[in-house]
Image (tube, rainbow, N blue to C red; front, side, top):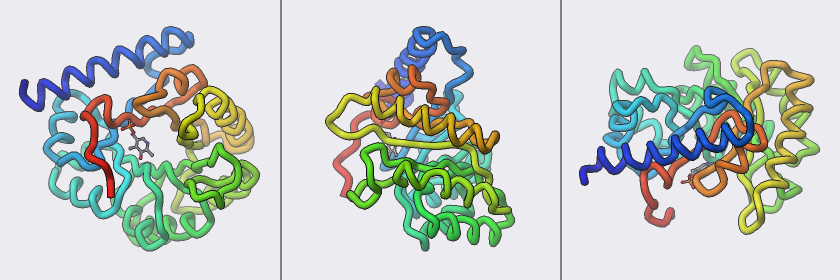
Amino acid sequence: MTRREEIAENLAAVEARIARACAAAGRPREDVCLVVVTKTYPAEDVAVLYDLGVRDIGENRHPEAARKKDALGSLGDEVTWHFVGGLQSNKATSVAAYADVVHSVDRPKIVRALSKGAARAGRTLDCLVQVNLEGASDDGRAGAAPDDLDALAALVDRDEHLRLRGVMAVAPLGAPPEPAFASLRRLSLEVAGRFPSASMISAGMSGDLEAAVAAGATHVRIGRSVLGERPALR
Ligand SMILES: *Cc1c(COP(=O)(O)O)cnc(C)c1O
């Protein structure tokens, strides 16, 4: 089997899972955008995905993401690039030059860095506030504490270079995802009630996309199920 055949087969299986999950939740398939997360995989795989109709690509590291976009040339400009990984402020400034949507905005420092980078590049950036569904944000996992979400969303919303689009979360490890995704949905309703542009819910990965779609996810971030198991990171 060629790499293209392998990706096509996996993609069809993921598409079928999303379609089934949407049907089970009584949601139209168009409600859910599939973002294929290509971290650790080469630009050639992004080109294959593009050829198979995928237009939303996720990356979690700078400068890997920038290099991949550059390697793709004009095709790279046809893709919507979603940055889903943890950010430091120096990297955030760089990411703002090429990412279209940043899913991992989790503290004021990152808001300022993204704003600076977007201003410098003459761009406006779509932003999601990442929430830590396990409680406080000082436990080592990424994401703002739910109590800080409102203030952070307001900070993004009033920034002229950033557009507040919604919320994002990763389900806790080693626990059922349903309660976490239900909390995310409640938080999303609060944020979207105050900021109407913030209707996106980014949730669901290879292992839990069904639970995320059931809880209202508008964007699922799928890596392994499309591209195969990654070698261990770091
Ligand atoms: C890698 C990654 C994904 C995709 O995870 P898979 O388990 O490979 O589907 C989704 N979201 C984030 C933030 C990631 O870093």
